[in-house]
Length: 390
Ligand SMILES: *Cc1c(COP(=O)(O)O)cnc(C)c1O
Image (cartoon, rainbow, N blue to C red; front, side, top):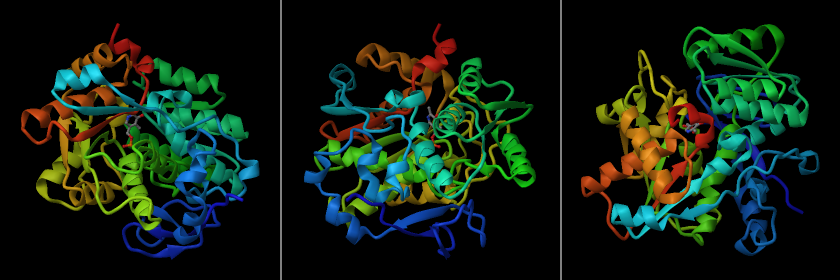
């Protein structure tokens, strides 16, 4: 019998521990993200390479290290287990031997936000949530709307009023209540907190509840499994709130504790937009936390996150990995998105294009060896950003 081995929650900042069987947002002591902990010795008894060979082709193949307790009641839309694509023409153009694209555009709702929301919303329902709310400038809203609809919980979405029509339309079509806010994502966050206080909505903002990061960490499990239990040398990750980067770094630790990989780690490259690069600035300054980025602007909606509650976790992972943080301007990002498309057949989100631009920059600097294994994350579908490419 496959069963979650969740044991408790632990604050990523102050280390305080909490019972995992309660609806909870940030650490009550220090208002920083809570991370899920598991009995990994027990998980390792059933989560084996052989057992995985027989399992469902979704992220729920790793159920031992996911939070949902009653797998019989799980509602999924087929999230995860996306392909790790070899892109030989792109690799040749870059002068590299082994370039892969982890193509997250093939998730439900066209982005990897599906992974996080699938985990968070199934778990929230299990713990008694009766309505959900999220601030989002794009894909998170669509994914929340989809899982709320599938599971049957009311969904309240708060979006900046300049969000592309497609993102808004998706939420409306999925039955969510959409409110447009004159401001940025952090202003939307204020509205969500107000509504949560008044109406009892559960706030599923990124890293402000413990389980979106658990859904997104499955990208790390998949990379290891798809590369036959070896990790790549380099991962390029487009960083907004940093959930996926933090999640994968956590996944690698768990995999090592379960004996599935060794102590080697990829260099983690955090890629941001030049118009909103708080993590890059903090990385370069050697700071533990990132300051709010004033006047944040980029066409890559997933990267328009001026302040991240998990900033210190992103920065720790990038530094511990020997990686770096790079900012790419919008024009370069869009050109790279077209190049990725024309040389691989993947219609990527601009966030994916940003990762290719960052890789080219690192290659120019001589920071990547020809024979190194490189994974570019394409985190969403270009179709939702068609207005940028017409
Ligand atoms: C949300 C989003 C990101 C940023 O993801 P984080 O894990 O929160 O940093 C990147 N790309 C796309 C397409 C997104 O929707």
